[in-house]
Image (cartoon, rainbow over all chains, first blue to last red; front, side, top):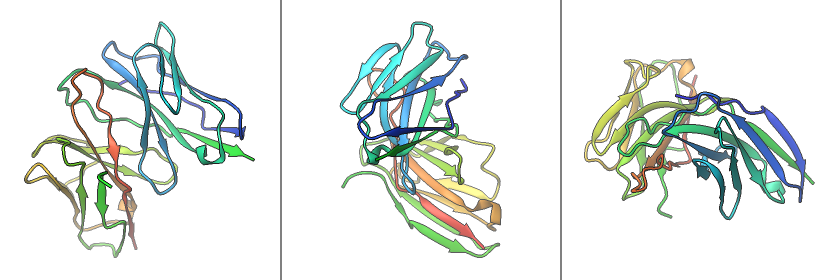
Length: 114
Length: 117
């Protein structure tokens, strides 16, 4: 399974755009890239998932270059409530695969200041 | 709320005691996962069920750990003869296979925090 590398921590201020980049040099053809968010004393929460190019939903965008060896989670206009740990994961996307387990690293602690 | 629920939320026990945790997944989800998370680390995979079948177990799951999902709905995780190193947050997640073949989106419960004295 592909290993991911992301910054341990980042700081931002309210209203700014935050970009968190994740490296996954050994990503496999069947792997999808998924980001989760975790608040203290809660389970992780799915944010966004993609395979290539750009994916956007109501809370974030995910940019994936053509070589797929990295990805960037973009959070527009963060607020204090976006302070959390953000995890980048890669996983096998084959239907029926039993490899659906997720491997989390240490994640990126994002702190948003007023 | 029809999300994943876990019970209890907190458990304090003495070393050597047995503990059992329960997870109720989202009702239509056929896949269920257990993870363990220690302070400052991301969740670590323990085991995975598809319906009632336990299809995968991590090497982290020692002989003192056992998980069941007898009717393919709720699941239990039991730890026998607890040790202080078992102190952690135990997370349960569930998912449903997507038709598009994407990696499953897993929905996590709030976790059970275990403290072994």
